[in-house]
Length: 247
Image (cartoon, rainbow, N blue to C red):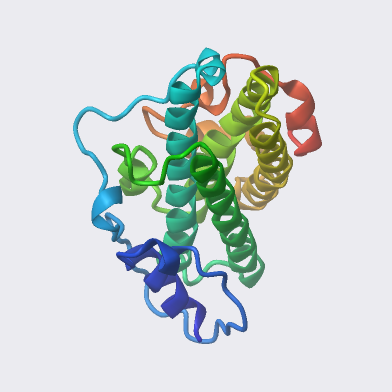
């Protein structure tokens, strides 16, 4: 199967299993013309709730099982949006370097795995994905993602950059609440996010203007409400950013 066809199926599928089907054996010989989709297909239970977006409970909510379910549900939706948007980028940027497209596919696979990990934790808590409303916050930014540089600044360096803090903080809170399995899931995701942020930083280094700092290139490629303040959690973790290769 051509990579373009796979990516299109991931974004437009109206069943969860098709979105989470792991890619294998693809060619990328016919990437086609740029295709900028504005919203994903979704099963009815996971249709994006526009207007007032459902809020993710604060980290203290991990101590309460009902709030923990809300957190896990929101995090699963974050990962599903990431799956869809890395597939979206394969459609939007067919002329991007082959190594960049391979990197998008690798991260897409890991986002699929992250989604499944959260689905398993929801099931362990007696809930299911789709039992609560879901937001489309990430999808609401696609009109800004007009270049590969803008894509990595938004997805890799803002949303995944913030998860360097969120995954560690929520994981510690899950462990303190006695939920060791959820803590391990969040630790796994945190390790993967370091690589994902590194992907964004390395490609922004290639895309930026000669002599331009990485920070200035980031600022030039994001639009409000995307900004450095959204690229972190409440407790900033410089160690993880150094591990991701940020200066």
